[in-house]
Length: 78
Image 1 (cartoon, rainbow, N blue to C red):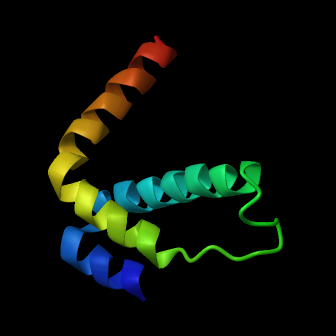
Image 2 (cartoon, one colour):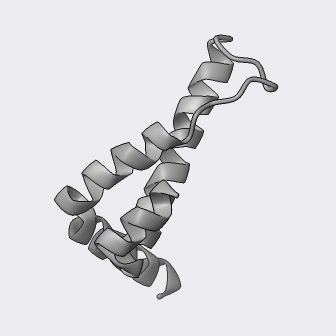
């Protein structure tokens, strides 16, 4: 529900970036928690804080991150 509302707010292009940032930040934090043995593989990690963090970052750095990503992909494909 939170992602749907943010999609209406930011638009579909920024929603893709927002969800990518959410998934990556959740993965980084989850791996850290697993490595430090604060969480087990069966424990849940709430996803809403990562969506909220990404909703904060997207308006601030969204265009720069998209441009960086596209130039990186273009360099890899060349």
